[in-house]
Image (cartoon, rainbow over all chains, first blue to last red; front, side):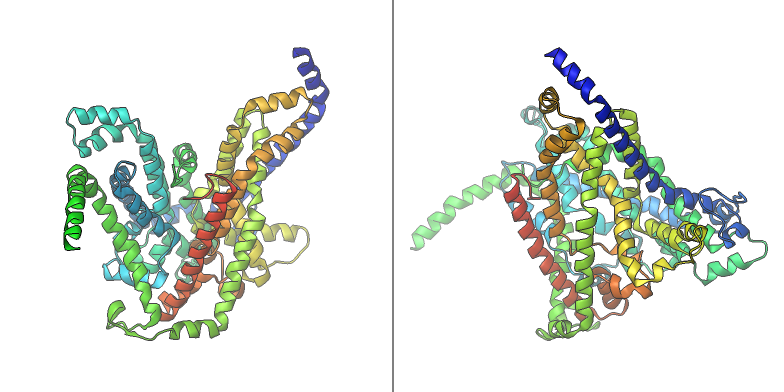
Length: 297
Length: 313
């Protein structure tokens, strides 16, 4: 038996090795192609005005300079939008987690008969979206037009994420909760002192889901925010990428060692950096989250 | 008759009373969430009535006068409507047909890598774009395909003239598909790899004894066992394809490419919210939501039939 496996391994090895080499090469190529746009953008952001105007930049900076970065991080007015995005995301994730946990916990209890109907009420929001215009008019009537809160409130409960939390609570060992109940713990205390401390993984996962949505959001600020000084980061990035007349004028100056293209590149790279920094955590928890989230079970 | 009724009520009332006594904390817990869903999901849904009204800003959603199916008549006579419908369907189909298989292939290939570090490294890199916003992806695409971008520099190197990719109608769809592949296919492998990792290893061992090559193992073991997951995700994808998402198209199109790029989400935004044709745009949106609902429910049902735990619910 052992011998046979060994011989078959030897016999196939050449073919298998070629197979593995081909697969590896294709995958590495795919990974390289994935990164090329980012590398090219980084190169543009680090190049000089002349290099940019003469279309000389490909994958490496030409006439390396930090002038575009200095301008955007200095006078470019990117820090206010950045702060708006950071603060609204942090606050939003906290509110979202609190409301999701509070709602998902009762829904995870099979003996709590009402949960079935409330679940229907939740799932329906997943399959039928309100048309955009009445949605806009309603939220505007709540006073969310030109308000920071519009960056948070529309994203507090997503059926899909709520279901992930619920699925997790369902798998929580009943014995622990029952023991606490016998000790006279109320339902709120069981949730906050017994269940939640053991739910860090799902909180991190769902928190990241909400966080990435809020950080990357564009549609809501686009609909609701008209005032420039309320712009979150993505709106600011978009206005720099669009390179309006104001930006054109700034880059026309003799002393300016940047062009709309290099500034746009800086903005794009700037927006990717926080994602790259948080990426190790993001990857770890997102993979877990992607596996959860069926309404059933 | 009367006595029976009272009896019934008495018998029932002892139920709810106990129920509330026991479960009131659960209701308190759910209260904020339920109020939230009503305020942010259900009230806007009911606001859809303005599709059947002549919306007036002074009277608001509820007081405006009814106008029956006027807006829908206008909608179905309006050539733009068919254009948006066509664009949404074409882009949805392209997305489903051309980008859907790529994560499957990538996952099958990643699974064949024996070196764990290389595998992890490649996976890490190809997943990054998923977390980048469409604003940033749009910025990247415009910069790379614009004048002086990498794409045109390469063309120039080969002696070709500058091509204004983003301003040409014929290029919108390829750009749309490519940007989807770039952003989403790496992340799409996660679900498939998890399914693959749950395959019983003894299957591979017995295949090895029978002298199967690695390609054969992939072709005849891994791939067939992956099919149910692929099929389920495929069905769910089709079911939701009317909602392509506002951000992607809005950050990739230009007024020059509206004719092929405009989808329900972007059209409703421009006509409904920017130009304030509230009632008409609501009719368009309501059409999208209702057809979307029918499709999601239908395909979810099919997914449930195809594999046992397939559907979303």
